[in-house]
Amino acid sequence: MSHQQTAPTGAQQKPWLFHVLTCALISEFLWNAFTTAHEYPTRTEQVMTMVLNAGMVFGLFGVRNGGPKPLWWVALIAGIGLFAIRFTGDAAWWTGHLTYSLR
Image 1: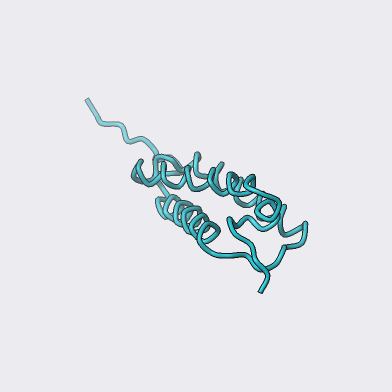
Image 2: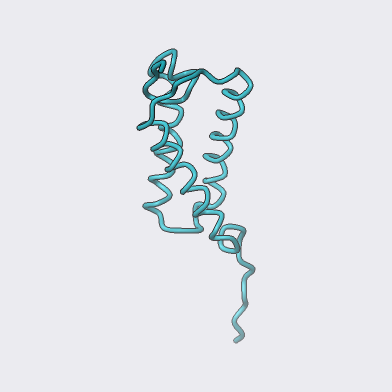
């Protein structure tokens, strides 16, 4: 009886992608939660940021087997939290940060 070798999936071939996505989502969430925004971005920048965040969250599902599960869950919660922050107020909707103040 011979052992058949299976081809590794995309997530198993590129574990670095898992770590890049999780690091990016977690660090952006922490940045938006703990720093104060001082100006509103343009509408294009706001939409582009939201699309990029959504793309990273959806990409996270593609590489979910590429690393430790607890890290995946933390990154998923951070990705959802990025969108939850935007629903806390008008300034948060535009900036993506929890706090806003003029200098």
